[in-house]
Length: 277
Ligand code: DGL
Image 1 (cartoon, rainbow, N blue to C red):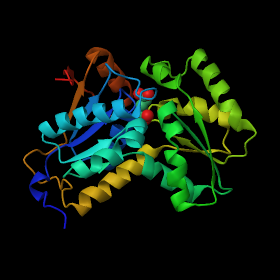
Image 2 (cartoon, helix red, strand yellow; image 1 turned 60 degrees about the horizontal axis):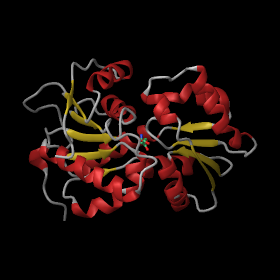
Image 3 (cartoon, helix red, strand yellow; image 1 turned 30 degrees about the vertical axis):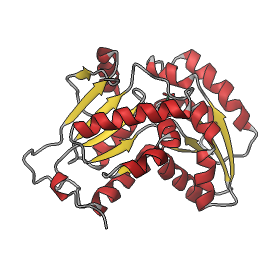
Image 4 (tube, rainbow, N blue to C red; image 1 turned 90 degrees about the vertical axis):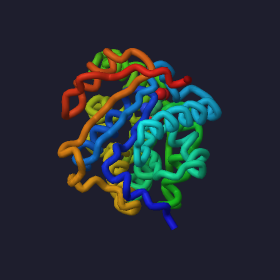
């Protein structure tokens, strides 16, 4: 039987990523679960995660989860594919509160919506190398063919804010060239930074390829999870509107400006913390 968390109904949800990418997931939670408050942590001092080892990502994820727990969150969203691929299943047994990642929800929707069974996945070296998307897609669609491509330059380009720059378009063309003749009809944006490059990727891949952003399904999954644990905020708590707080491990001002360019609300401050302490 699940432990009762009902007294945590009005507590915030903790969301984390290596940097700004997880904001694409936070943004979707804000849209779909407008009554939920969020505490977001972006590990801007240690980004990128995608080229680091599994052991390192597990250590970073544990530190961040301890921080979010100390802030009183009621559930955790691992808004990073690399951390979801490397750390989620390691850490889940250690946790009492609900935790959800982005890989499973994204893989499920791709497996269920592909028409020809040919699915591409782009992500970090860590995520693509782990083969986790392929494994998860095959749970729902055993005959699907899953083709992966690591796109390591996308993360620094997004962190730099070069979302529509000519350099970014050229880099995207090169990475995506391998999919041009592959016959895929679905492409999973398997890194939370990549939905910010959606229009560039769309222009290159064309309208015939369905781009899957796991953020949407993750927010749906979070909604179900909060319901199962009976901790969904019903809006009848002490605070009438959802509150959003942002913490980072470096470059707080740059993070704040970026967040304000993509979130539906204005954030006043991103607070710097020393996550290793
Ligand atoms: N946004 C993250 C992901 O979804 C990590 C990118 C990185 O830090 O390399 O994998």
